[in-house]
Each structure stands twice: as structure tokens, then as C-alpha cells.
Image (cartoon, rainbow, N blue to C red):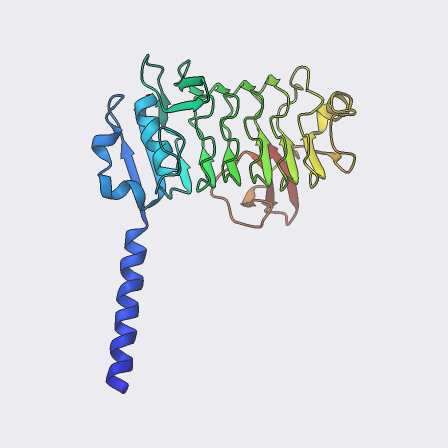
Length: 298
């Protein structure tokens, strides 16, 4: 009996080890567009939980990334299970005929591909339900319409190069907190439409994006905090008048000037996790004199 129990325990441990190895991390660097498929073997396409892609990629490469994130070229569910996608060092390139998604509804049909370099294209990750966290390319300038709509997204890192976010880009996602970069100049309507879990939005720019639309936060019932730079509080309050949920309050954070000789000794996010370097959004900084301060990092 004891031997049998021991054998079963060893077998279960072996299964656990195999399972842990099965759900892998994958990191690849391309040297040219169109070669991603050759760098990710077929077996890895459906068991990768965390995927990092660096280097130039086109629509053909993004077709594979979509498939790994749960949707194939035709929009059907795939066996992909990638939940964390790091594209921070990727370079999205426009290339004619290299599409990542084909959509057909009745007589309507459309091929989707990046329409410009450094663009997160229309419906690029539409309905990719396994996808939970995305770090966008560091040189992204536009996040196109419906880019992440109906995905499982709970966290997104938007670089300080993005100038425009188009309609429904993050609609119907599970985002909880969003940090909008200082580079942002334009927001289209219903970017965050029906984001039922969204509680906090942080604007890091001291210049208010032009013409904030009336339904930017349409159907966001849990949105209670909008954080802005202190020096732009009045401008944001005026720009958001009547364009935010009634329960949402606008608060401000300013950078604290510390006395000579006082040094930063530790930095944390709002969840209390230690940070090794400044991270976009609100950081909590502890100083050598024992004081702490919330700092807004653009």
C-alpha cells in the first residue's frame, strides 16, 4: 500500500513537472519581416503562455501572433493560449498583401493589415479572449479602431509615443486600470465602451488631448477615479465636464521636490510591489528622510 501510494505521488509530481514545462515562455527576435513562423515551431504555437517578439514584423507575422492569442486568420477560435504578449521591441511594418485577419459577414468581406508602420491595426487582436496582458511596441503611434475589442485584456502598457487611440480600441475588455501617455493628442469616441471592470484612468500628459469625446467612458460603471497631473487639474476638469461617469472623481498627483541630500531609497506601484525603475503611471516613492510621496511618471 505504501509503495503504491509512493508510486502515485511520484507519478503526479512527474505530471506536474511536464505540465509546467508544457506551458512555456517563448522569446524570439526576427531579422526581417515574414520569418516569425520559421522561428516558432508548430508545437510551441499552442502551448505558449508568455510570448515576447522583437524585431521587424508584418501582417503575416501578426497572423501567427493572433493565432497564438486565440483567433485564427478567419476569426475562429484557435488552440492558442498566449495570455501575456510583449511586443515592446517589435517593429510593425506595413506591407501590401500581408494580412493578419480576413472577415466575411454576408456579402461583406475585408482583409486587415497594418495600414502604416508603427500602427496597431484595426481588429488586430479582436476577440482574442486568452490575451490578458499586452506591452505595445515602443514606437507605436496609433492604436486603431476595435484593436482589442472583446479580447480578455486586463492590462495594457501604452508607450509614450502613441498619439491617437481610435474608436472602440479597448471596448468590451476586462481592463481595470489604464495609464494614458503624455504623447496622446487624440481620443476617439467609445475607446473604453462597456469596460465593466475599469476603475481607474490615469492621464499623464500636462496637455489635455483635444476634443475629448462625450462617450469616451460609455458604460464604465466602476470607473471612480481619474488621475491627472496637478498642474493641469483645472484644464482636465473642464475638458471632462459631462463626459465621465457621475461617480468618477478627478484627482491630481504632482512630483514632489525633495530637499538637498534626500535620496530615493525605494519605489513601489499602487499594489505595493517593489519597482526596480520608474514605471509609467503612479509610483509610490520612499525617501531617505522617511517620507513617501506619490509621483506621476509620464
